[in-house]
Image (cartoon, rainbow, N blue to C red; front, side, top):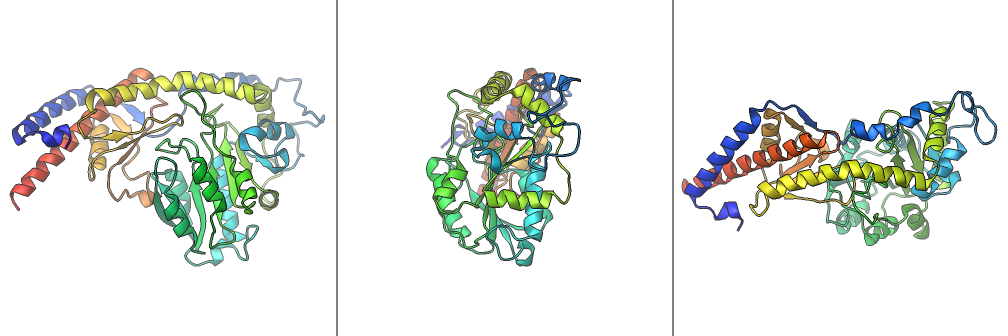
Amino acid sequence: MTELQNMSDSALRAFHDRVCEEFDAFRDRGLALDMTRGKPSTAQLDLSNALLRLPDNVDYHLADGSDARNYGGGVHGIPEARELFSEVLGAPVTQIIIGGNSSLALMHDCIVYALLTEVPGGATPWNDVKGAKFICPVPGYDRHFAICEDFGIEMVTVGMTGEGPDMDEVERLVADPLVKGMWCVPKYSNPTGETYSDDTIRRLASMKAGAPDFRLFWDNAYALHNLTEPRREILNILGETEAAGNPDRAFVFGSTSKITFGGGGLALFASSPANVDWLTARMQKCTIGPDKLNQLRHVRYLKDVAGLDQLMDRHRSLIAPKFEAIYEAFDKHLSGRGAAEWKTPEGGYFISVDVPDGCAEKVIQLCGDAGVTLTPAGSTYPYGHDPHDRNIRVAPTYPDIADVQLAGEGLSLAVLVTVSESLLAARTTEKTT
C-alpha cells in the first residue's frame, strides 16, 4: 500500500483539498510553458552557429575538386559526409546515404517505396498485401505511428521491458507473414529512455520472420545524446543481421537535427548494399542530389567523431540539469506517495511518467489549464489511444531551466490532484455498491 492508499478517508480528503489549493495558486501565475516536443533550446542551437559561416566564400570545393554549388555527385551524399558518419552508423561508406534535413522523411519515403515497389527479398510491393502490419513497441514515437496510420498499415503493439521490447511477443507476432516491419528506437527510446540489450538486438537480428521482406526501421535518433558518463554503447544491428544470415533486415536511420540545427541538419541512412541500391534507385527519380553545401559545412564544422563527441558533451551540459530539475520536483512532491512512476534515462530527450490507470488525460488537461502544455494523452500509442490512459511524455529540453522547474512543480501538483480525486471517487463507489 502506498502513502495515499493508506490514508483514511478524512486524511485523503484533507490532502486533496490542500493540493487543490496549491494547484490553484500555481495556475494563477498565468504561465505559458511549451513542453510538447523534444526540441533543442536556443542555447543548444547557438552551439552550432559557426555553421552559418561555412563554407566560406572562397572554398566551396569537395576533396575531389568538384564544385559543391553545382549539380553532380549523385543521391548518396558527398563522400566526406558519408565518411564522417560511418562510425556512428556502423556501416562502410558505400552503404551510407546522407540526405536532406529530415530522417523522418527518409522513413516515410522508405515505407512509400516499399508499398509501391518490392524491397529486396520481397516478391510483391507491400501495397499488394491485404492487411499489412507493423510491430510498434509502446510507449513509442507518435510520428512513427502517424506514418503507418496515414497509409492504412495496421499497428500491433508490444510492451517495453526495460531492455527493449518484449521479445517473446515480438517473435510470436513476426511469424505472421503479414507483418512487414517494426519500429525500433534502440538507444534511449522515445519516450521511456531505455536502451535495447545485447540479447534483444541479437534476437531481433536472428528471429525467424514470416515475411521474407520484413524490415526493422531502426531509428537510432539518440545515438549520441548521452546524459551521463560513461556513454552507453549498443550492438551494431547491421553486423548482427549479417552474421545471422539476414543482411537486408535493417534500415538504419539517424540525423543531426538535435546535434546542429533542427531545421537545417542532415538525415542519415545505412543498410545492406542491396537495400542501398534499392533506395537510391527510387531517389534518383525525384532528385538530382541533396544539398551538398550543407553537407560540406557540417563536415567542416564537426570534422570527425571526436568533434561530434565534443559537441555532444556541450549539449549534455545544457540538457542534463533540466532533467535533474524535473527529477527534483518529482522527488519533492511525488516520491513514496504511489501517485506516479517515472524513468531516469541515461540519454535521449524525454522522461516517461506513468500515473494510475485512467488519470493521464486529466493530468495533462490540468497542466494545460495552468499554462504547462504537454504532449496530448495517448500520443505515445498507435491511433492516439493509450488503453490504460496512464502514460505522460515530458520534454524538458526546450524551456530554460527556471521554466522547467516550474513545469515540474505544476505537473507534480496536477498528478496529486488527479490521483487523490480518483482514489476518493473509487472509495465512494465502493461504499455505494
